[in-house]
Length: 224
Image (cartoon, rainbow, N blue to C red; front, side, top):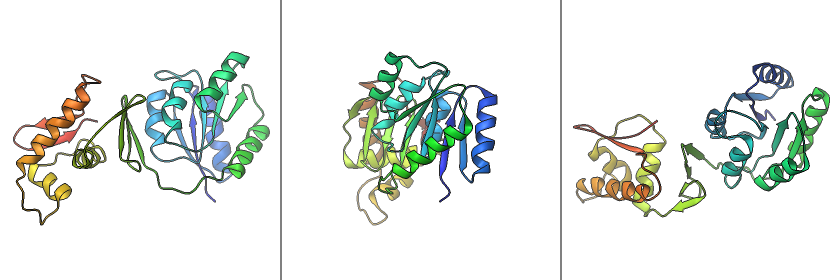
């Protein structure tokens, strides 16, 4: 099987070395140099994550906490030092193992192989998107701000799903109505504006950042 491996580390030399090593073993390798990029790459559903603890942006612990409820794959922390408090914190965040720098490539490969062999998760096509502090779990049809769920009605989530899966693309009101309510619906596309108003109001209770932007005279888009 051609496993997908995410390597998240802010040291370019380590990323280059690991990427070359695992690509040579047949892995499909994705890389990230900071916490924000790591969250974007997680959306591509890796089979295992090598996660540096100290990175710019969200650190390894925070990333692990944010993704663990949505991503079931093994997460192996990379760290230059390993104290008991850090180890406890990492396992509490949802990590599966620690690799201490400097490490042997042979041992690292053996640990990665062992975790993948033990990984018996179902091959569910769970799609998760991380947009700033928001987490959208499309399989569960749930929207979270940090760890708090934002309750959305069915059509409200349908609109969030449509726009967030096409960030930056402008959808007219009529087009949204056709895609969410259906071509044969006999209602009024004005209902789209009301649903978006409700979504914005619910988001405003948690953050002042707007995710759905109005493009005057054209429609709406999800802010990248």
